[in-house]
Amino acid sequence: MKDRLQRVLLQDRMAGKCNMLPMLKSDLEGLLADYFDLDKESLRLEVSADEDGSYRIVMRARAVRMYR
Amino acid sequence: MGRRILITSGKGGVGKTTACALLGLQLAALGKRVVLVDADITLNNLDMLLGLEAAAVYDLYDVAEGNCRLRQALVRYPYIETLSLLPSVHPLGEVDKRAFGEIMLTLAETNDFVLIDCPAGVDGGFVRAAGGAREALVVTTPSPTALRDADKVLGLLEGYRMEQVGVVVNRVRGDLVLSGEMLSVGDVARLLHARIAGCLPEDDCALAFSPKSSADTELAVAVRYLCRYVLGASKTVYDATRRFRGLAGGLRRLVRRM
Image (cartoon, rainbow over all chains, first blue to last red; front, side, top):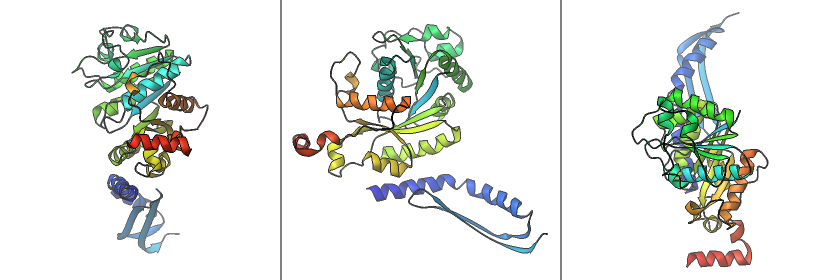
């Protein structure tokens, strides 16, 4: 029961965070664009929840060049 | 300025109103000035729990509408002079969120504690009640459905930037926790990633509890632990399994099974 409940709670929490991802992605694009000529189509953002309640945030992006 | 504490749960029927009343009674018994606010406007029960259902003349709605002064709507608890109730008796009255917040602030100016009994759910009633509080106690039971709803409420409360949020685990059966049939308070803390403020054992006589009662029940002991936590005097949580440990405890578990 404990494991099942933990899975349900994690799913509920991630579902609640889904609305946040597009906003976070947009904010990160803006920030990175100050330093890189960013290939915006290449930006990938993943947020997943671990069982201990922490979150794993993985971002991948490609830039054509870096501004000096 | 007094402390404004929201007593909420998400799921209905977990003992939120009872926990609110018990905590208020204990705080007032220690000499604190306490107001219990029945923010559950359509399904109010705090007045009945305290035996004051016939005493209310005005209520929260009347205060918000300006039909009476705030002190006229407060019903004093006859057995403890520092405890009052701001009831809700108009079944269909709507109270504006801003007006509610102002009333809570006014109450906090002259009281040590304002305990806000929140309606079940997370809709307008919850939003109104949460907006009037600075701290929250989320009441849950160890059941999966109650925990799921409590988790959602904890997530929503993050948006209110409360000064303190704690979880009260209600209706804990110590015998079932020891046999692995019920989640423990520790399990609840790990699942919800939340601080446990209190643990209240299952007690069939909970609704009959009052300071007039001379019985020193396990529930009364647990409420005192919760009270000490709220006052910041102790972080110790009542252990609902303690009376079911050892030889005598084993016999108690056996009797409960019969």
